Length: 445
Image (cartoon, rainbow, N blue to C red; front, side, top):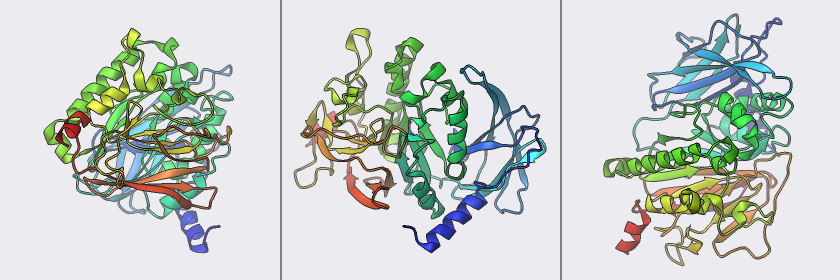
């Protein structure tokens, strides 16, 4: 299935990233584990997160531009996390923020908790400015069991194919299962990938236990502060991560629904300021539950009036689709359905293609991708025999999505089938010669 060269490359990637290295613990419970990275509040920052079973008096990262000369040291902090299950298992979550990093540079690092330290990992910082082409792997719904796409994602990362990963909700199945032990297993499984490529996330329904406490504790995202929504910039792209789950778990409070909407509107309006949109014309959102889908499982997205799309006007929960349309969101990424689906550009159930010959060139509506087929214990999901007119392509194969923002006008998207040994089963290029609110753009036509 894989070439000898690719296997050797991947083994080297896993070894240097510490994926197979066991840290000496000596029974202290202070060995670093579950190491992963994410972008910081600024492009020159990187957040390093890990855990230890027991408390340590030190949380530090030793790093540098040469593997054998980790001459820089940054200290951080840790806090205790107690799982909500019957065993009340605890662990300590450590966080160190590396600051003042040079753009487009490879750094090697080890994390240290008192006398125990990890193997060596590495990451590459994002280039400065907007004139570069971010490359991402995007997927949702990957479990500790049957994470079928993970080995191929590691292969890709070993080849240097990605600047970042976006995991669109639903981790481990579940992070809290078996008193958090399944979450621990999953975090260790993804370590060789997530410790070397910024692993950006949003929350899904499978994280809901104990008010999403496992997700909030295990993942540190830029400008998030535990709210479970945030945004960050990457080259010519403004990414926005939201929690769709506030709508479906109101027992945890309605206030966060309104607060997220207010923050989201403000964030998108700021991204649309002329000086910002000229620098970063692409606006891309990601959240777990889709506005639309054509699966045959009766999930909310199969309804014409899904909560994520239309909200609950009687409760003053406003439509996200209307907001996205008004603020000119170019691409919305979703998961939840264990399948892949590409939509035609759409708004309010109506197809808004650019033209018959070139539907994704200057479309009059938002393009949606649903990519929840990375592999989990709940297996595949399938589709209606007669999909709605806004559904352009779908597949139930296990796999994941790759995206390359070639420049400020061209975005290339392709779907990898792991069932078909890495075959590209779908691809398209979204071309936006003008970005902005769709009402303004459509009035210019």
